Length: 529
Image (cartoon, rainbow, N blue to C red; front, top):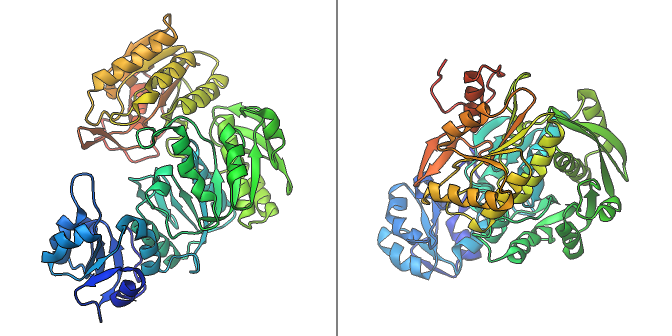
């Protein structure tokens, strides 16, 4: 957990008077410098918030918190009983997780009325990470000191930290914002998942602009159905969460967000890929695709401020839609249209690094290999179609499915994959505690049901699967390896094993005699050269 170097000094007694229902122990004269859910990362002078977990109550670790210098435990009634023997003051609240955002905002001075960088939030099933990195890239181009919190990474004025959650817990999120303010960050792009909203991870934060990308089948391991999943995202478009919104109309859910938004919104549409092209043409900002190449997608967007033709450095109309959404969010955030146009024109397009988002990892000869983070049927469909349009030869799809996650989408993933490719290779992803062979069998069955005549291969582990994939294609063909994206590990029975699909793809290409570019990312394997 990142923290400001000089956090505001708070009095525990004031926190108690503001938030606690009852107090056990002495709180007067106690200084407070931070707040955390994790004893493993607790620092002296911080309060430990103990919540009920799946298997244990966090209060079981109150003694550890005391040993590490915690000044208090904040918990519920059940936790107060457990934590009593630790000898720390106990502040009892009804819902520790539910109040964590407001607690953290008060501790770090990052609430709605506090001075903060300009805050941009993006939600939706697919595209959240891309929009967040595109926001950061364009802000950099116009000379703004930036911060970022995405599935892939956290950035603070140029410093890069690997992420573990799409959206950090509220205590970490507020500490991160305080640190960014301390380092004079001017604008922050934050990826906000449905789970972040449901689990109070962005409570206490008022975003200046909220963006919505789309909604498609995903996360039904966390939500009962698609309606519940959709409802989890809508609170971002309330006045206690954001001041303004920008909504993409390319999926049917966009129009519903517009209808139900409680804040002022503007809309963006890409008629060539929208489920309802007429609705997309009626958007405030309309996006037209001009050219698609392996190195990027050129598009023209037209709206109230004018017209702009530029290029996003990844393939696919959906990526052009993401870029346009980011640009309109910046305009709604108060950045001058001419300033954005001038910067993009000067630089020949958008300069943004989108880790693991349809990332081309191959050289200028041999098969084109794209590594992507997409792991839903909708993402597969869009990305395969984009790869198809820039590929003169065959398209091979390589993918696996998450273990211990939404299994209801596996058949649809397999169907979309086999219908959009010429060759399919099924492998493993994060098996977690599931049997990887069983997951692969389900995917192969789904693919064969959809296309009994298709060329389908099964290969495990992924290190072997990418070698198999490269052996099945040649110059002018393409491989889309979907799922691993930017990730640097695989989760196998609870152990995070070092792993980079990007580096494995480069090694397979090199072993097959194809040229590969220099690696531009950390490699979690020993160098074989």
